[in-house]
View (cartoon, rainbow, N blue to C red):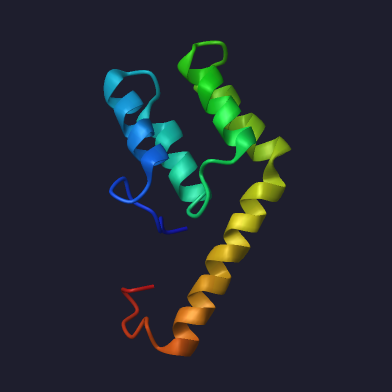
Length: 101
């Protein structure tokens, strides 16, 4: 999915980029979170696992696997929101070019 929010308009993404530059998290975890949660990255479950990774209580790969398996309903909901947003853009002709979507 394409990311709707950017670090310019999302404080939590700005926080994650800062932690990535400090070396607390890798680009793999950041990329996974941004791709799978394009709308609401600050869900409680996701934030808890990110904090576990930052404090080195759990490895990034296991956190990604836990989020993929246990919180699949959150990922599906984000995907549905993304699809409905694309459909609304097509109906209202705001996405005139295919590159806009």
